[in-house]
Length: 162
Image (cartoon, rainbow, N blue to C red; front, side, top):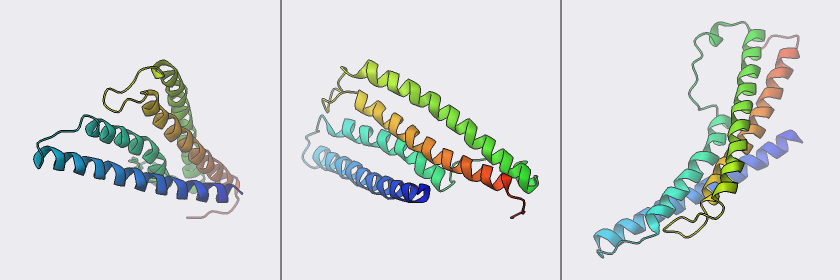
Protein backbone atom coordinates (compact mmCIF):
# COMPACT_ATOMS: atom_id res chain seq x y z
CA UNK A 1 0.00 0.00 0.00
CA UNK A 2 2.78 2.43 0.97
CA UNK A 3 4.56 1.72 -2.30
CA UNK A 4 1.41 2.43 -4.35
CA UNK A 5 0.83 5.71 -2.51
CA UNK A 6 4.42 6.81 -3.16
CA UNK A 7 4.20 5.79 -6.83
CA UNK A 8 0.98 7.79 -7.25
CA UNK A 9 2.63 10.73 -5.50
CA UNK A 10 5.61 10.43 -7.86
CA UNK A 11 3.37 10.63 -10.94
CA UNK A 12 1.42 13.59 -9.59
CA UNK A 13 4.60 15.45 -8.64
CA UNK A 14 6.24 14.83 -12.00
CA UNK A 15 3.15 15.87 -13.95
CA UNK A 16 2.51 19.01 -11.92
CA UNK A 17 6.14 20.11 -12.10
CA UNK A 18 6.34 19.55 -15.85
CA UNK A 19 3.16 21.60 -16.38
CA UNK A 20 4.42 24.37 -14.08
CA UNK A 21 7.81 24.44 -15.80
CA UNK A 22 6.22 24.62 -19.24
CA UNK A 23 3.94 27.39 -18.00
CA UNK A 24 6.83 29.34 -16.51
CA UNK A 25 8.96 29.06 -19.65
CA UNK A 26 5.98 29.94 -21.86
CA UNK A 27 5.08 33.02 -19.80
CA UNK A 28 8.66 34.29 -19.68
CA UNK A 29 9.08 33.66 -23.43
CA UNK A 30 5.83 35.55 -24.09
CA UNK A 31 7.08 38.43 -21.93
CA UNK A 32 10.35 38.61 -23.88
CA UNK A 33 8.47 38.69 -27.19
CA UNK A 34 6.11 41.39 -25.89
CA UNK A 35 8.97 43.52 -24.56
CA UNK A 36 11.47 43.29 -27.41
CA UNK A 37 9.22 42.80 -30.44
CA UNK A 38 6.16 44.88 -29.54
CA UNK A 39 7.80 47.30 -27.03
CA UNK A 40 5.01 46.54 -24.60
CA UNK A 41 5.78 44.97 -21.24
CA UNK A 42 3.13 42.98 -19.39
CA UNK A 43 2.64 43.85 -15.73
CA UNK A 44 1.78 40.37 -14.55
CA UNK A 45 4.12 38.03 -16.48
CA UNK A 46 7.33 38.53 -14.51
CA UNK A 47 5.54 38.12 -11.20
CA UNK A 48 3.71 35.00 -12.40
CA UNK A 49 7.03 33.56 -13.64
CA UNK A 50 8.58 34.15 -10.21
CA UNK A 51 5.51 32.68 -8.53
CA UNK A 52 5.79 29.49 -10.63
CA UNK A 53 9.53 29.32 -9.94
CA UNK A 54 8.86 29.38 -6.18
CA UNK A 55 6.34 26.55 -6.60
CA UNK A 56 8.80 24.57 -8.73
CA UNK A 57 11.50 25.00 -6.11
CA UNK A 58 9.46 23.99 -3.07
CA UNK A 59 7.61 21.09 -4.65
CA UNK A 60 10.85 20.04 -6.38
CA UNK A 61 12.65 19.43 -3.07
CA UNK A 62 10.64 16.25 -2.68
CA UNK A 63 11.67 15.01 -6.12
CA UNK A 64 15.30 15.73 -5.29
CA UNK A 65 14.92 13.65 -2.14
CA UNK A 66 13.16 10.85 -4.01
CA UNK A 67 16.04 10.65 -6.50
CA UNK A 68 18.60 11.15 -3.70
CA UNK A 69 20.07 14.08 -5.62
CA UNK A 70 20.43 16.54 -2.75
CA UNK A 71 23.98 17.38 -1.79
CA UNK A 72 25.35 15.09 0.89
CA UNK A 73 28.75 14.70 2.44
CA UNK A 74 29.24 10.97 2.87
CA UNK A 75 32.98 10.76 3.47
CA UNK A 76 32.55 9.29 6.95
CA UNK A 77 29.26 7.45 6.40
CA UNK A 78 30.67 5.54 3.40
CA UNK A 79 33.36 4.04 5.64
CA UNK A 80 30.91 2.78 8.28
CA UNK A 81 29.77 -0.83 8.56
CA UNK A 82 26.32 -1.61 7.14
CA UNK A 83 24.40 -1.38 10.43
CA UNK A 84 25.94 1.96 11.39
CA UNK A 85 25.33 3.25 7.87
CA UNK A 86 21.64 2.38 8.21
CA UNK A 87 21.55 4.04 11.62
CA UNK A 88 23.11 7.18 10.14
CA UNK A 89 20.55 7.07 7.31
CA UNK A 90 17.67 6.77 9.80
CA UNK A 91 19.02 9.66 11.91
CA UNK A 92 19.49 11.80 8.80
CA UNK A 93 15.89 11.19 7.74
CA UNK A 94 14.66 11.95 11.26
CA UNK A 95 16.56 15.25 11.31
CA UNK A 96 15.13 16.14 7.89
CA UNK A 97 11.62 15.33 9.11
CA UNK A 98 12.11 17.63 12.12
CA UNK A 99 13.50 20.48 10.00
CA UNK A 100 10.69 20.19 7.45
CA UNK A 101 8.14 19.92 10.27
CA UNK A 102 9.35 23.20 11.76
CA UNK A 103 9.34 24.82 8.31
CA UNK A 104 5.84 23.45 7.70
CA UNK A 105 4.62 24.92 11.00
CA UNK A 106 5.93 28.39 10.15
CA UNK A 107 4.60 28.03 6.61
CA UNK A 108 1.08 27.67 8.02
CA UNK A 109 1.67 30.77 10.14
CA UNK A 110 2.83 32.72 7.09
CA UNK A 111 -0.22 31.61 5.10
CA UNK A 112 -2.43 32.96 7.87
CA UNK A 113 -0.51 36.25 8.06
CA UNK A 114 -0.40 36.78 4.28
CA UNK A 115 -4.00 35.75 3.51
CA UNK A 116 -5.17 39.30 2.77
CA UNK A 117 -1.98 40.59 1.13
CA UNK A 118 -2.17 40.44 -2.68
CA UNK A 119 0.66 40.21 -5.20
CA UNK A 120 0.81 43.51 -7.09
CA UNK A 121 0.85 42.10 -10.61
CA UNK A 122 -1.17 38.90 -10.52
CA UNK A 123 -3.71 40.06 -7.93
CA UNK A 124 -3.86 36.87 -5.88
CA UNK A 125 -3.07 36.42 -2.21
CA UNK A 126 0.60 35.98 -1.32
CA UNK A 127 -0.61 33.10 0.85
CA UNK A 128 -0.67 31.05 -2.39
CA UNK A 129 3.11 31.44 -2.59
CA UNK A 130 3.53 30.17 0.97
CA UNK A 131 1.24 27.25 0.20
CA UNK A 132 4.03 25.92 -2.05
CA UNK A 133 6.29 25.77 1.02
CA UNK A 134 3.65 23.87 2.99
CA UNK A 135 2.95 21.38 0.21
CA UNK A 136 6.63 20.91 -0.62
CA UNK A 137 7.60 20.26 3.00
CA UNK A 138 4.54 18.06 3.56
CA UNK A 139 5.39 15.84 0.60
CA UNK A 140 9.03 15.83 1.65
CA UNK A 141 8.04 14.63 5.13
CA UNK A 142 5.97 11.78 3.65
CA UNK A 143 8.92 10.69 1.52
CA UNK A 144 11.42 11.10 4.38
CA UNK A 145 9.20 9.02 6.68
CA UNK A 146 9.16 6.23 4.08
CA UNK A 147 12.97 6.33 3.85
CA UNK A 148 13.21 6.44 7.66
CA UNK A 149 11.03 3.31 7.95
CA UNK A 150 13.09 1.62 5.24
CA UNK A 151 16.34 2.41 7.07
CA UNK A 152 14.92 1.09 10.37
CA UNK A 153 13.77 -2.12 8.65
CA UNK A 154 17.23 -2.53 7.12
CA UNK A 155 18.78 -1.92 10.53
CA UNK A 156 16.62 -4.65 12.07
CA UNK A 157 17.58 -7.24 9.45
CA UNK A 158 20.17 -9.78 10.47
CA UNK A 159 21.70 -10.18 7.03
CA UNK A 160 24.22 -7.72 5.68
CA UNK A 161 23.51 -6.26 2.25
CA UNK A 162 25.98 -4.01 0.46
